[in-house]
Length: 181
Image (cartoon, rainbow, N blue to C red; front, side, top):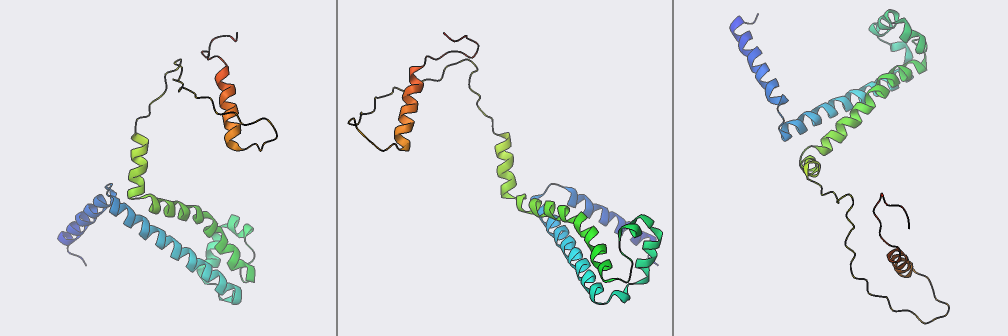
């Protein structure tokens, strides 16, 4: 039996540790995500190992598994009969499929904690400069490109870009609300 004074101290120490774990310290967050991701990963691997064991020895199902199935008739209707080879694989597949997205979220969170998260926060809070709604952008002085000699020539990206730029500069600029001339 634990002395009531020690029980109070243990409760307050536990509460303090939980308070520290809830604070937004990057290293603590990363440690928690690492521990939870590895615990979940190992639990899922153990579950799959148990399914493989039941594949080879289907008669060794624990009694608590059959009792649980008797208490959950909807689950019993989905799964094959206990004692068959497929029972272990099907019973393990349900929780593994449910917890795989959570494992993916934990892995993504582990990779984002730290410097990448600080960079994302800096990008999100960085002010953006929006262009004026009706102001025309200043056009740089275009120097005419030298014309190649007439005849057959190969069309490349540079020539196509020059042609498009020249065609775009011939059209008069207009504000978005003005009708076309």
